[in-house]
Amino acid sequence: MNKNDLIVDSSHISLQDIVNSENVYISKEENFVKYINASHKFLINTIESGKPIYGVTTGYGDSGKNYLDYKDAALLQQNLYRYHGCGVGKLLSQKISKYALIARVVSLSKGFSAVSYELLTRFELLLKHCIYPAIPSQGSVGASGDLTPLSYIAAVIAGEREVYYEGKLQNTADIYQKLDIKPYVFKPKEALAVMNGTTIMSAIALDSLERFKIIINSMESFVSGMYEVLLCDTTPLEKFVHAVKPFSGQIKSAENILRKTQNSKLTHGRDERYAKFFTDNNLNIQDTYSMRCAPQVLGVIRDNFEISEKWVEQEINSVNDNPLIDAKAEKIYTSGNFYGGYVAHAMDTLKICAANLSDILDKEFAILVDHKFNRGLGENLKLKKEGFFHGFKAMQITLSSLSADVIKNTTAASIHSRSTESLNQDKVSMGTTAALDFSKMLPDIENMLSIAFIGLAQAANIRGIHLTSQFLQNIHDKIRKKVPSLNEDRRMDIDIAEVVKLIQSGVFA
Image (cartoon, rainbow, N blue to C red; front, side):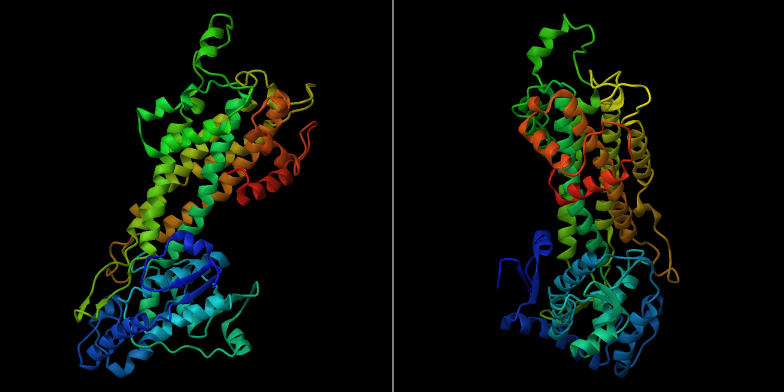
């Protein structure tokens, strides 16, 4: 066993455990195996007694009024994943598919879904061989969970549909034959337990949270560089300011930005600003809101991110299928834990956060490139002053365009609940839509940040890199290894793509 091996049992699994996992194993501890199988045995005994159990000896949803004989239970499970094979849209990434496999087996391992231990080991088998179901991104309303996208996991367990294997999209049956894996036959309730949950929205959310965390940290790095190249007063970052408005995210953002400006010869404190006020007619006593209020703007985002992260982690560790089975008390509960409201609201909130981050970034970059406000950095950060050069003029246009693309998509998905499935699913979470919406914002923000960092490096050259903090010098040097300074007008799209890779790697965070 190594430190990145993840052992799944009924205990809590953190998001970081999932992200860091290299090998995933189902616990072989005897008490855990007995615990899982006892729940499944109780369910089997109950349905053999003739008691109608939703989704096991009845039809699904509005068809729950149809009673089925126990002998048809296996066929019912097979039909469930087959008739839900109607997903559309772009396939989710292999990474998200892996997260979905882990998240689903974490939920099923809590012991209240009445699946067999054998089914849990099927998830382990897929993860061991890096067999990732090919899952269409669209087709879920987020309650009853992610039925249609999760049907692609159930179908793969049964040896059907397509998977990613060795980096290629291939038929599951072919891979099973190659690896001598027998298709799994679902026992009563097992396909329903796989499909009736919030796993796809949670997996998309987890992937997006990873990316957005890097974006938040990188944004603070950009702001710290802006404080330097714009010759700003660091008073708004000082500890006292945020101690008297003690929101943890705001305090953290201010600390991060101030720490990264340490030893800069370009920033100054309040006393210097006061001293210069009567001798410099162009000096405002305060900097603009987009600089001065950056900790307040980013602090709200940090706090909302932390709440959202906790909600997604709790959702992954919850039992979110239906019905719920309490073998110890010998009770079965029909319920609605498949409703993905927490993920939906977390993602809808982070969409607003992403829009605010994009908005302040657009405004800060506007100051950076505008000679009327950038305190001597010149028109569009040009190094050559001739009128036929235009510097970062079009780069700003692209950045502003991207900010609009982000901001226009902030409508909450959760308020667009659609009644469907014969009005049985009459109030749904739209959690998967919310997660997809948020995930689609992130590439635009990464491109915006790339443009902004390239501009920041140019501004550092104009000011004199020897005057900047060590932190900004490090950022500058990493950019310059990929992107030369803009001396004369040239295409910049390739440069943007190169710096996006740096941002995604976390080097600016």
